[in-house]
Length: 387
Ligand code: MYA
Ligand code: JJ1
Image (tube, rainbow, N blue to C red; front, side, top):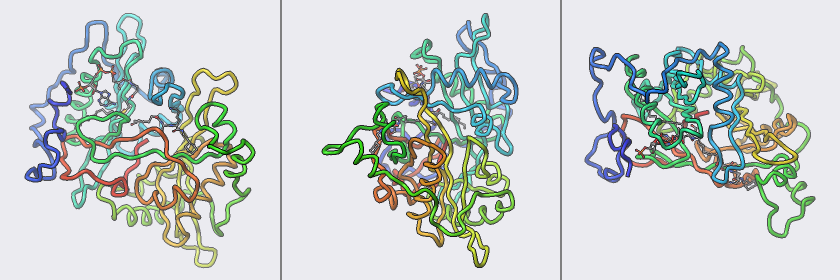
């Protein structure tokens, strides 16, 4: 059934429930001298390129993804990651340019496929594992189903191995062998009228437009005293809060101050982070963040872009989590986002229903490469959000 994935060191469907298999690496590292030194062969018309995300290449990558990346099951919306977002997502501390891989047509130089890795430290229970996070796998619509994706995956694997890294983490909307967890997308309407007009959501039974708009109404300003935007000086305090919070999950990133500065410090049109500074003690007690990922609206006369915010990492030690996220919704509404999305990871279940999120029609499956987990995890055991 999975001609490619059956050959890879990933949990296989036939092994589900086999408790004799140990947790940890599926195969041992090989000596670096035994890692293939030359790139894998591509079909003759194509060639590999390493994409410099600081050069004009980034515009080509942006165009490929804008026209060919992930869509919903009815092909009504397509992720539209911005150039600034891609530059941020692909250049964290310690990134490798060689992991930003393109395929282009030799004759025309046209970019037709892309895949990326970035380095990350992930803790699985008590084990710290250096991994690659694989994302932005994309093959041009006209070149689908020609088995290009397996070659791209083998090539990124080879380049990760060359850096002496032997595990990876990735997410996908499709089921592959085999998810460590399956998560549900939830959506909180901020601009209910537009969402209905573009087919993102529907008018509920026995609901009118005006009742719906009223249902999702939010206050004009945040309610938590001391709620403010995160700044550079907050990095040490936020790192402490986040490290302590993430320690409770089975799978979570191991963030140091450099990672927090990169991944959580606000960047215009990319990532927003807020925190609560106690008006008395000035202690940083709570923290919330969302990243900005619009979707193209395919074939609508009136609208071309859906402005979406995605819940990222949130930590509440003093403010109730519900109130903290409600403040995030208020901020997102003020900034004109149409919808606020969240997965049911970490403690998100505790606020989704009460804050009027509804379940989406999409799921997100989480995977590890060359690392076996004994049992499928609950979404609430995951402390990891990929972009
Ligand atoms: S997830 C986002 C993926 N991108 C999209 O969905 C964008 C729109 N779609 C496309 O561009 C294409 O349909 C893609 C497949 C490129 C997805 N992850 O070339 P094919 C398997 C892994 O004929 P195409 C993200 O970015 C499929 O099961 N495998 O198919 C994370 C089949 O194998 P098998 C996938 O449709 C990516 C084979 O590919 C995916 O033309 C993580 C068919 O190839 C998928 N999303 O192209 C990648 N979709 O026969 C893995 C299909 O066995 C990383 N397939 O069933 C692994 C770790 C590597 C590093 C390791 C380091 C140590
Ligand atoms: O956005 C998604 N679904 C939306 C739109 C559905 C349009 C028709 N298919 C949705 N809307 C309902 C919202 C409603 C608001 C009021 C309350 C009730 C709910 O469900 C879905 C997620 O649900 N998104 C996708 O399908 C996009 C792909 C998801 C997989 C992503 C894989 C990415 C891999 C990257 O590494």
